[in-house]
Image 1 (cartoon, rainbow, N blue to C red):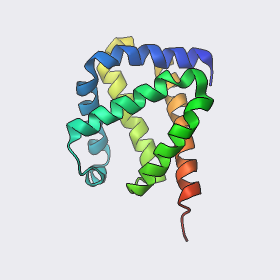
Image 2 (image 1 turned 90 degrees about the horizontal axis):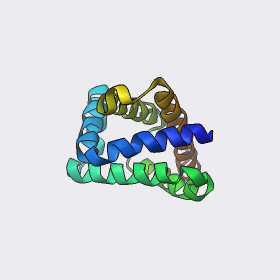
Image 3 (image 1 turned 45 degrees about the vertical axis):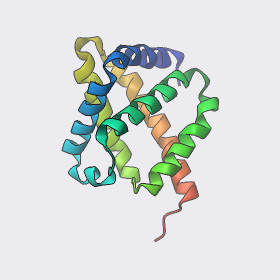
Length: 141
């Protein structure tokens, strides 16, 4: 991970933080548009779920300066997602919804470079989550 990408992600997320509830709603609305079947994975109040999402993203974004310190947290999150029946393929949809949300929420303030940085960092973290989930819960043929 390049330090410039980390700064871009952290700076753009700082702009999102004041509108966190609206951003979380945008994210989940887009996620369910992209894959309506994902809605059934969420059996809790979506406002509460949105707050949890923003808290976890904040933790990850703020921890990017010391990736090694947050890897165990990201791995545990991946393992927990596996118990919620999140599939490997869902991570791409989640990433697409996240980038779309940032683009819509930040408008012109979200540059092509920001998008690239978010995409790369999201892919890195999602890969860690997927690997942890598959390690703890191996798929059977």
